[in-house]
Amino acid sequence: MTITKEMTIQEIVSQHPETVRTFFKHGLMCVGCAAARFESLEQGARAHGIDVDELVADLNETVEQQQVES
Image 1 (cartoon, rainbow, N blue to C red):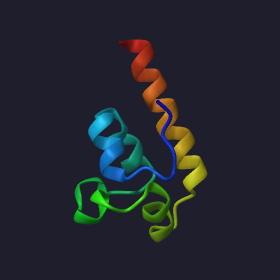
Image 2 (image 1 turned 90 degrees about the vertical axis):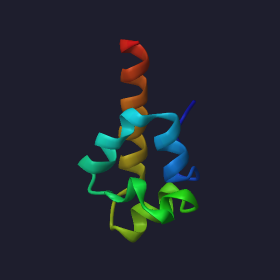
Image 3 (image 1 turned 45 degrees about the horizontal axis):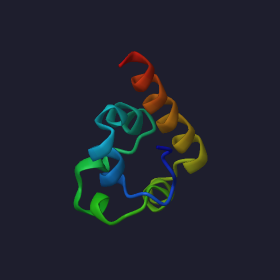
């Protein structure tokens, strides 16, 4: 599964808990906030001034690394 900027933050974290550190690394600390349930990754990143394309790339890299290690 590929993470996209259209996915909700909660959807990403619930399916891939290993991504929490990646969110924090990019300064997106709202992985558990109420908006994470309905806000897309793109909306959350833009609201916090985060480069969404870079974040998506890093999230997908994190998921890929986890799959290799499993």
